[in-house]
Length: 103
Image (cartoon, rainbow, N blue to C red; front, top):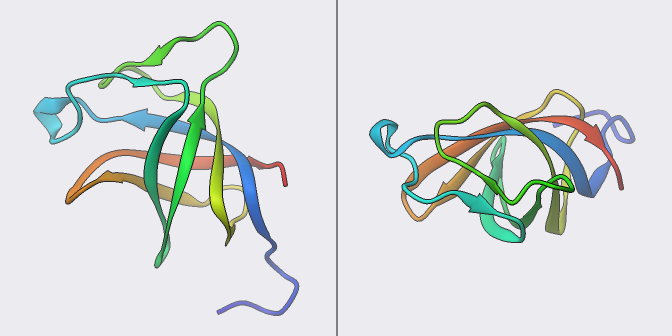
């Protein structure tokens, strides 16, 4: 619940994304540009696509977080600083924090 107009719905934002190593229950394979995943924000889940920064080809599991652009299929109420989870099936394979709402 939020005051009307206090949070806007967006479909594109930048976030610091970390992918968990397989030893921590995450992925074995890196996330590549164009990766599609399921993002959980508060109680909402939405499918989206990860776009890596220019010059980067992959985000390896267990490596430091990287600033990426995420485009969701549906508008979702987000704001700077909001933490989210990246899930695949029944596993949480990564987490992130929104750094900039784009649109």
